[in-house]
Image (cartoon, rainbow, N blue to C red; front, side):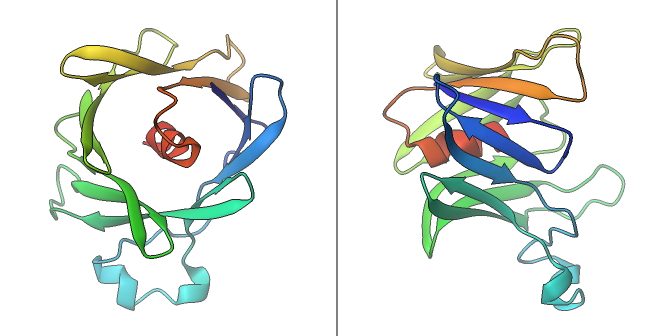
Length: 168
């Protein structure tokens, strides 16, 4: 199980094991995160483009994304990729009009990430063939300025991939 804690910075999550020992960091973009195939990828200078990064056990991974559609009124459908160098470890397509279920592909396995959030609580279940395998849930309580999440996914899914699924 992984604990993801966000302090006062809304751009960084500290990743811990059950003993609260730090095992990594999830960094969200503070500038523009530009899709690989978006119109801004050639316009926005690289020094102003920011990346979504996962540092897990002193190894760096990055999250890239690309546009699947370009709908101005309803938003864009996106494809997210977890990259280790040039190797894709996991991917998912996020469809704007399908807000409660995403299909995640890890190597040759497919999982469903299903939103089960309630009032003031976030919860997502990871399922395969309609069987729940794990969950990601908000364990913060009422303090919204410092969020804490519990990532309890199957051990066969690598830690960096679990953090990628949490990022989604």
